[in-house]
Image 1 (cartoon, rainbow, N blue to C red):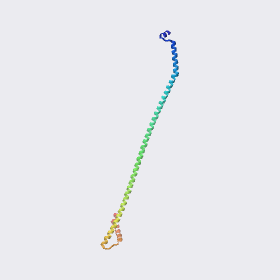
Image 2 (image 1 turned 135 degrees about the vertical axis):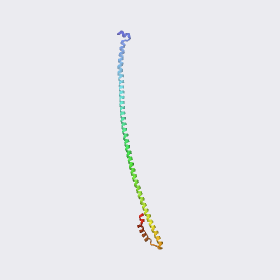
Image 3 (image 1 turned 30 degrees about the vertical axis):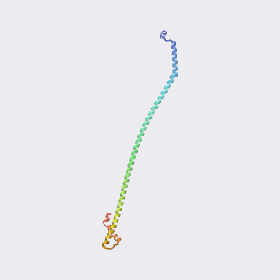
Image 4 (image 1 turned 45 degrees about the horizontal axis):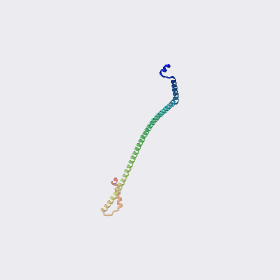
Length: 170
């Protein structure tokens, strides 16, 4: 075997030294490079895992917030519809009250106008009676050519007019 190793050009002393050097380098690399690199990779993996967990939590919170905002929006929409319905009902009630008040005011105005018309009618009839009595007394005085007692005859004419058909026209 030595001949075969010599024929290949391998020197066993050099091979042993190289093997020892390789093992020393391997031990040194393991102590000074491999462990720190593995620790750094483990830390990085832990940070990535933590970041993924935080990302999942953030997604979960965002989904929860989205659900809550949709609920709040729906609740606000319902409250808005209720407020609109209440405002409409209030407006309807107010309109009915205003219409009833306007009708009441119109009826009062009509009644007051009727009262004023009746008062003016009564005053006109009274004035007409007075003038009729004056004309009648004047005409009777001309017919009989003497002066008549105006107050006495006016009372007689008023009594006649009160009992006549003119009373029914009041």
